[in-house]
Amino acid sequence: MLPGVIVLLAVLGGIILILIIAVIGIYNSMVSLRNTVDNSWHQIDVQLRKRYDLIPNLVETVKGYAKHERETLQNVINARKLGIDAKDIKSQAKAENMITGALKSLFAVSENYPNLKADQQFSKLMDQLNGIESNIAFSRQFYNDTVMRFNTRIQTFPGNMFARIFHFSPRDYFEIEEASARGPVKVEF
Image 1 (cartoon, rainbow, N blue to C red):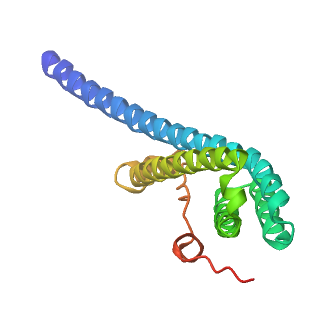
Image 2: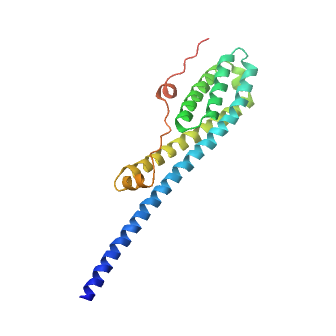
Image 3: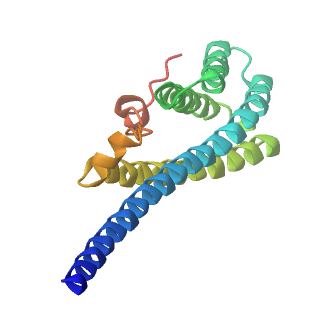
């Protein structure tokens, strides 16, 4: 009888050990995904800061050529301020949509000034901005992919049980507002 009890205890001990290892694995994967989401957000933030730093130079360059386009330039400056002051992902996304629309208007204004388009400083700034915009788009995609993996992990079984226990909550996507991002820019003079 004693060997039977030892075998039973060994089997129960093995099952408990496997469960402990599974819980540790699930928890660690959630922490890893959460940290990846946070890191990917910080990468977006780096690109946004670069864009915010570039915008005043772009506005100053355009001011020299387009003195009567004060409203468009002011909209760009105001949108930049909203982006800098954003405190969460939803307000950041809203600010970025405003910046995108304001920059589209600024680019439309630049089309009316051939000398501005030929200006080397303006061309250099535009090239930098295009590079930053590409990086932002890539970073947004990476962030949203990571959020999707994290949210899926904490919303599916058995992760959802552990997510509640360890207080993991879903993250927001960084979404582009359809109307301002994909529609044509209306410029009126």
